[in-house]
Length: 177
Image (cartoon, rainbow, N blue to C red; front, side, top):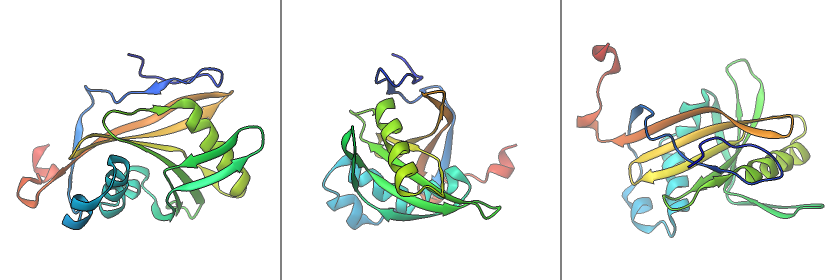
């Protein structure tokens, strides 16, 4: 069970680290979304959007731009990205976040991260690309990854796990220290 990712010649699966601490966030997914999402991926994208988890994870102000995004890349063919967000950093830098979302039974592959990055470089050449992976571990636990590409390899820059909790279960982090 390999956790890291790597070379563009081989597709490695990204697996959430089961020993990583969990951050509780107030769950605010509308009941209608929870009830009628047609796939686990669509449900996960709803969780990300309604709980602003991309903003929390990246520490940027982010907006959903396309869901799903399909683009034809010469030499590759059609590339489908679960969702594309655009955003702005605290310093005013404009960013693009290609999101790969997967349900509990599927995993993100490094080749998809490479393709998403190539699509963003082509379609948004003036924006800084920060590829994100989202894995639904269970109905209320989400693993988020940020990836970097360096020398043709995909690496995990950051991984955090978020648990959606009810208001009564939200712990004031300051009192816990």
